[in-house]
Image (cartoon, rainbow, N blue to C red; front, side, top):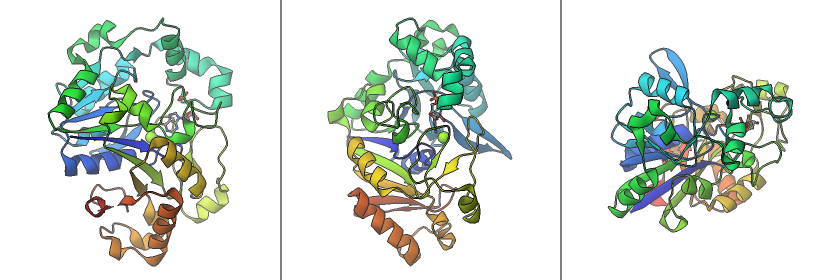
Length: 336
Ligand code: IMP
Ligand code: MG
């Protein structure tokens, strides 16, 4: 039995998708299922020479041998889902829990029309906050009520627990990041739900005793989109000097860039019940590390960074991403 949860440790956009893709190809899960809020999250993929932000289909879709699922805790925007299913060619392989909450056009209008959500909080305008509010008020529709997606409805919780019982590997992918959790983040500058590993398990109907590994993904230079405190934020002049510039996948807003925050990483790892740490963007700490695939070939500067992070977090760093391609990674998990 092996059920792994992968979550973001900072404010989202840590590069979880790449870690999910790598682990999927290594561990060969039969199911990759998504938890988290909904289509406010985005994962950039390249199709031909076009970039596309995937917002509903699990980012593990690049691994062709797993069934893809969306757990009952997640909000589904049927229009976004159907577009992605066609574009990525995953029809027949993707399943949605019938109990997922549905985002209506009206939720998007309320999100975008609200001065509080749009300007003060800096929401993504994808309707998630209002849809979760209606879900709590018990007035929202569920996925099973939407005829257009009837052919992909299933009981995700049952499917996953049956797979775990059969000794199959299952990957649960989180979205967003710890710092924007409704429960643990910088309230009120947060998303409309918890984003920690326990929530991702709950979103999929997997009990805490059935989780074997929690991989928390941190990026060497954390980023934040939208409003809210960011303790280690650097000036745009400084990030420009470092050559770091990022834009949000969903909103295309420029991401705020910060320095590594060891204190936040430690706290985040604690609440997430982290068993292993993944660090992405190590090539930004030292360009000479770009594309390196063996730990011994990292520069001293990069190794010092990782060793310090490991000490601060108190958990082993087992995955180190050295570039955007799937092969640009150091995997130390066997030795862990
Ligand atoms: P909402 O989730 O659209 O309501 O947005 C609330 C806050 O969470 C805003 O600051 C968003 O920028 C942020 N947020 C929501 N989803 C993500 C994500 O997937 N990555 C990064 N930030 C996010
Ligand atoms: Mg993202």
